[in-house]
Image (cartoon, rainbow over all chains, first blue to last red; front, top):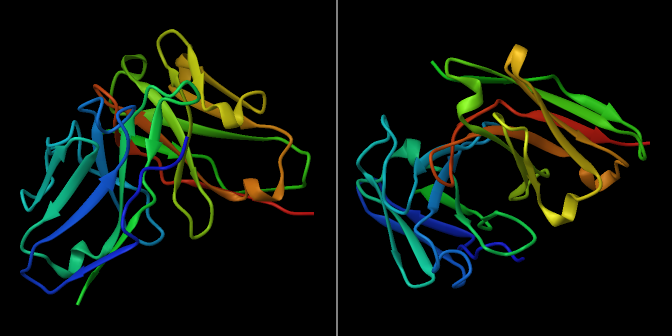
Length: 112
Length: 118
């Protein structure tokens, strides 16, 4: 089972919006509404930002939103802020017999 | 508040085993799963498996089948992950995380660095 495909890096200026894609297959992203997104700052544990494609946990800014179309999920960060600079990982449930979850390759977000 | 506190860093020789603990607090321990993932230095996140804290039932990624064992002690609200026959490429930060309502992890431990070196 390969990891879900994400762009290695995305950048934007403060106040702009950026979108990170997460491409899988019909066995994972396309087959279930169980995509989640995690933010990870250097040296820190991941933090849940979006679950079930487009739901935000309590306490997460509404500048973060999720969506999905076919086999590709997306995370959009609007009103980009310096504190958003981090690595972002998508994850999805999968019906692959070898595992239950699969993570994305990760995207480094840089705020210019 | 929900907290997951993991055991400290470990240094192991190739071929040895390591057992990492994850003590939970702030919620009903047996009402959730605990997932284990790892992250090699500078690399992405890899799912290793999960344990149902109520039944003790486990699901492991095929890659780790035969080498990983996940257990729990409900009396002390602690989950464990043991990885055997360690190799140098097992050097990584190991995280426990609480499995949320469907398929996501809503709270994470601080991580345990396991270094495998001769």
